[in-house]
Structure formats: structure tokens, C-alpha cells
Image 1 (cartoon, rainbow, N blue to C red):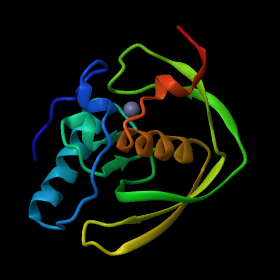
Image 2 (image 1 turned 45 degrees about the vertical axis):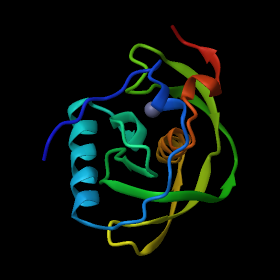
Image 3 (image 1 turned 90 degrees about the vertical axis):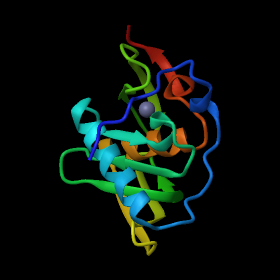
Image 4 (image 1 turned 180 degrees about the vertical axis):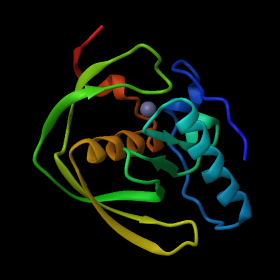
Length: 149
Ligand code: ZN
């Protein structure tokens, strides 16, 4: 495993759309494990491919109860609304209130290439929405309705 460099706001890769993962191979497993290690080292709760220079639809999330691996994720259901504080490892020192769904249902693949459906709410839903935004080239700054610094 290895730590990867986290790209910062201003790097053009962060505003590009990621392509789907097609090969579920050892290279993907290595990437996911590096991303999880990099996220934890930076005390983050999520990290997406473009943030480590990989324009592919892969992200990791851990809000305290275990690692979630999201490959080619898609939000298939959402409900409610939450307005809470958010930050991003690519935007150090930037914090703001964003609007996100309170609950989501996500379809994705796991590292073996099998389809998974997962449900999340509250903080975890917010973190997953934030990472899926990264895969479409959207930084959370665009979602801020009130800056906190
Ligand atoms: Zn982020």
C-alpha cells in the first residue's frame, strides 16, 4: 500500500468527468487500498479518484463504521434534505453549509465487479453525495449556501 498525493482545488482534473471502471483487476484493488490509506492518513471521511489523479469512477467513504467502496456509483433514490457543514481534502481550510438529501439509495459495483445496492442517511449520505459529485467534476464549493470561514 502507498499514500497518494491529494490534488488541490485549482487542478483541472478536479473539474473533469470520470469514466467508468471497466477492469476489475489487481490494479483496481491496489488503487482502492491506496485511496483508503490516503483518506485515513489525511483524517478524511471520503476520497474520490480524481483527487488522486485518476479520472475513473471510484471512491471510498468511511464515516466511522467501516470502509465503503463505490465503483461506478449512481444515486437511484433520494429523500429529504439536510443542511450541514462540509469540507473537502482538496479544499483545505474551506468549510461551508451545503444542501444534501437526508437519505439516499445508491447502486454501485464492488471490487469484484458485482452490483451492490446500499442505503445511507445523515452524515454518511452527505459523504457519499460529496464523493459522487467529485466523479462528475463538481467540487463542494459549488454547493455551499453559507461559507463558514
Ligand atoms: Zn471532496
